[in-house]
Image (cartoon, rainbow, N blue to C red; front, side, top):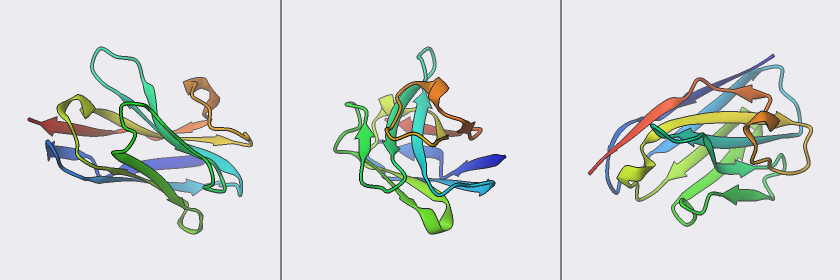
Length: 125
């Protein structure tokens, strides 16, 4: 059993640069992929950023490339999403997810084994 808890969301002005954190607890493993998804009203949940167990591979949605950075601290079992230059269209519920024992960074939601409850990020114009 793995529990993921997100933090760092809230109301942010356009252009702001908050950092989301996702802390994992419980049964953790040495090798895992962690990712951030988001879901805006009326839209499907989409992969925003992912990072593999070693941190050597990352992937980003085209809409956030150059603005968002995913990183993790394995010793702290924590993954971060640094969000820069936020835009109103970034408004969404952001979810942390983990996939265990996979060599890549899946885009499909059903490839992830554990999910946080999400944190709301609202960007005002």
